[in-house]
Length: 70
Image 1 (cartoon, rainbow, N blue to C red):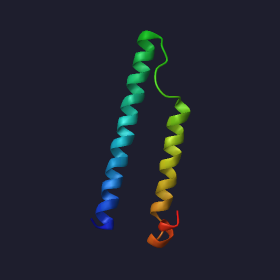
Image 2: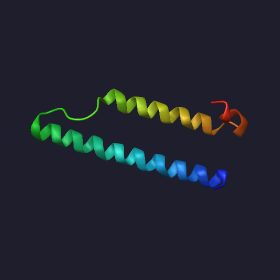
Image 3: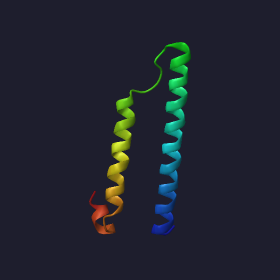
Image 4: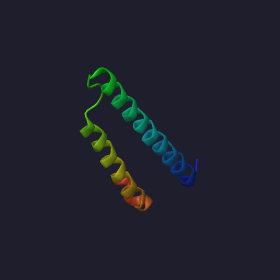
């Protein structure tokens, strides 16, 4: 696998994960509205994940040698 292919696969997986999280949040909100029960993860956890992904984008911009040091 080349670096370009690896980056393409990573970006596709990240997009799928973000879409899955959005679907999860919508379903969780609907369930809460119907049942009145809070179910699932703390919203802060979702923000933590988003922050982690933002950091990965910065690492992607580094040259390969610098990435090995991360």
